[in-house]
Length: 117
Image 1 (tube, rainbow, N blue to C red):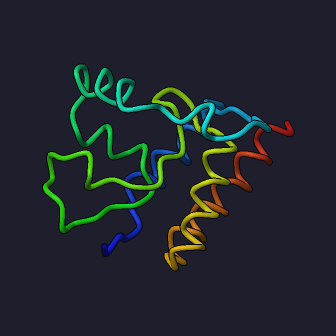
Image 2: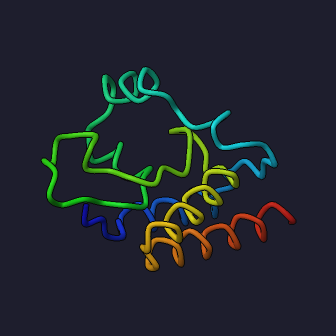
């Protein structure tokens, strides 16, 4: 699997954070990460490109109109979650995707700074 950084998702996450659409949660990402049913409901009302904006990783070997193209989710289709960014950063580090790890860390710092205001 050759996953690369999704620059559209990074820009989208930065805008959401700047707009205050964030959750500075201390929980476990598994409690907030949308399941397949929530993903499908989102896709019923939105384009796949909008779905992709919620994922920091992009696998261009997968079809453009498939959920399998997108990896490292960080939000719940409404807000950026602190625990989602932490999970993305940790998984990216474990899998050797340093560009995704770095982006998740930068977004995490921006979220924490915004949340502290």
